[in-house]
Image (cartoon, rainbow, N blue to C red; front, top):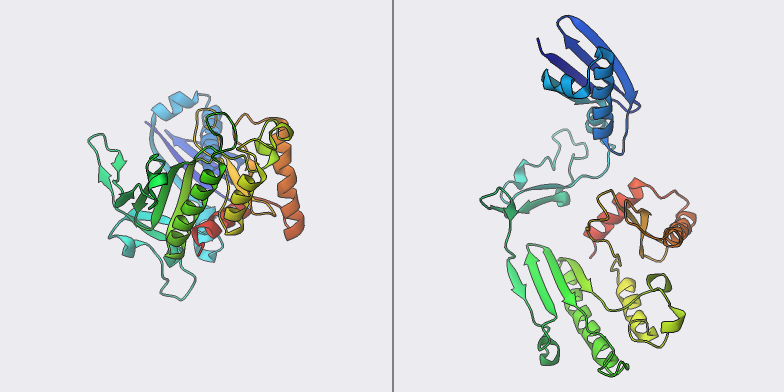
Length: 317
């Protein structure tokens, strides 16, 4: 007869009840709130050990696994969990529990339910063409270099930009005025989109190191395009307007988790660097900047702060 496995995750411990041919084993492992799959798998491993078999053999001969979460049940009852967003196929937004008949706070805030238009290819992957693509800033001198793509996906706008360099053919700073004009023109464009209620991501090569920590030799490059005070001041202007500056991008060195929070100056810092191979001095710099916010706010930086910062970005005016 096959095994049956029943797992319940609580706030402190995860309990596992295993049964086969009248034989019963119960095991208990610590709950891992940051990732419930860890304690789920650890409880199965502990159950296999209790039966004296390998985890692979246990799972091969298991007919049923039932999983319940006391954490989830308590969260639903008490309404004290983290804010949740739900993505559904467009037209199905009414299925999301954004209201509660008893008058309690809803499980999902109405503004956190999003409908997406989905198209699936032959392999089952979801594809979605943008609603609209624009490639013009409205000035021939900018458009002639083909530096811009603005794609609209409902309320989301993604601007893919290759910002100009400020150095000329002779490696002088002759193109800096052109570069700053491009920055200003794009800033006006994306600011209008934000004020219209769009959620805007600006991605690409900005060709400017914002702060000294972003450059290998900042002192030697004070008069070089890419680190000139006027170029860095342009990025300061973006931040002062509420934009969040971050270098995060998926890549082969970063399969692990990355957690971001803003510092006291509104710049994005690494709370957890995952597997990104950053130098220790860079990590220490980020820890120092986060500590400044902790001191200002009187609280520790944690996952709740990460969620709040993401939410504040998603609701920017």
